[in-house]
Image (tube, rainbow, N blue to C red):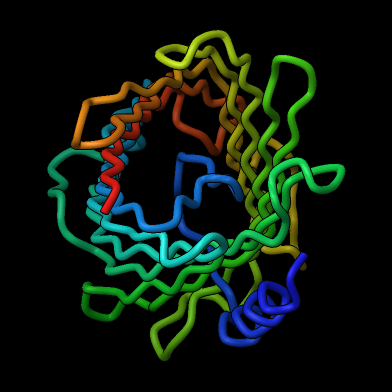
Length: 252
């Protein structure tokens, strides 16, 4: 493992504190860095609930990223969000600078390790900026790939509505059946502020099946997709959430 990767990761930790959480329904992998590759990405999620007040939440992103080298992949994201409930509109709410740092080569150690960090600039008046940071862990076990994200977060700036650190996590267990289609199970959770974690029913927790695949499309590179349905397992979660990810990887 090169010293420069550890130095970059440590510097990013220092720059990212304090840190913040953002609702997100897709996994980051330490092995998704491809040097010299341009990525165009769209993520989306739509929540549904029996109670109309808690239903119809939406979030969308448009992202562009680039593999600067073999261990650093920055992205710039424009985020859109619609609050749950009737009569809400969808508005741009954040411009986010994201970074993935790979700390180990694939298969070098017991698991592949990386660091994720982002800073979100709010585009909404009287709303706080946010940051997010945490480790990325991935391991192949037989024909499966297990990916775990553990994040801490905190709103920053004069408009923050709380001063605590939020703990969120995500896990995917994928069975590598076929490049064009592999079934997976995903879990997304938000335990809340780490100094006041409450009952499980008051935390966000979603779990459900997901399909993952990719296709080669000639000189354009590779098209990747993920789509699934997440069931809310607590009263703090929407009954159901559809989530998707579309990505075009273009070698340059």
